[in-house]
Length: 347
Image 1 (spheres, rainbow, N blue to C red):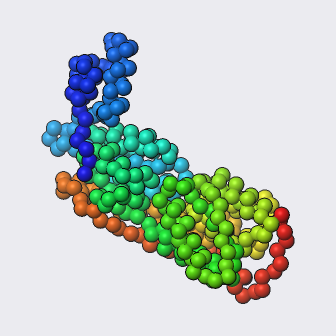
Image 2 (tube, one colour; image 1 turned 60 degrees about the vertical axis):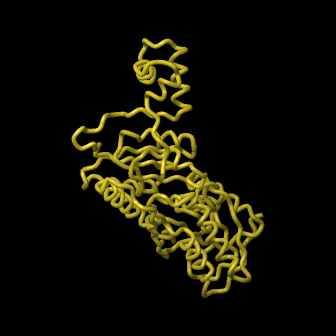
């Protein structure tokens, strides 16, 4: 499924130097001329060579370590995901080697290649997997399980959330309460989860006559939610409800509305997605789609450990988790039973 690993001998041959010189250059030793060092580094980068960080045990050929490569480690979603992975890893006697790449495909490619020789298997969440050949070219020859990752051609087990179904359910919930103008705050353009949640929102709006949907950009963080909240408040005709594609952005919207003196849900309803721990402790408590994030991480690791212990590649398979609608205070129910009162203009 992946390309053959590049060795230190390949780098030495291409750079026309000895293996010892390549080793010294890559390890920063001072007894290598600077032009030679630059040449070796250029060849190693061009060949996408990643040195082994440590030799595996000769008896077990096992590092007892699992690699985890994520888009980011900031925010409660990733914190919960790592918590689920770490909990099972500790009870299984495994260590974790964690890397993130902050939205840069080259950094993700380098992070994946750098795991070779350091770990027994990999958990990967990649928004770039839809690029033909991206995973096959960069994944080392190791057991791999993907999390919330769209594959260009199914080749590895994947654990994913049915984001489309979740967004459909939330949008329908807001419509069932009598809200007729809904705003949607989306996630990063190249994020698979974000695209699926947007698709679910659009499908629910398109299926209901006499309703209107407005869309605003977001980045799955509080700051972009706060910014979108300000843009929503600036509209000449304010929406009845806002559906943010994750809870962090919903909390940013909540703060923007509070700053403007609006009451949620009396003046404007609000909902999120993920059910991060903070969602139930804000005021008003946040209506959201519950994703068992820690369970998602633990389930993916459990499948990976089976693959590692079997010492064989796993067939491509999909494990889909369906989100659960959690109705709390922020979406409100008054609009479903009482006439909509005239809203003051903010424009």
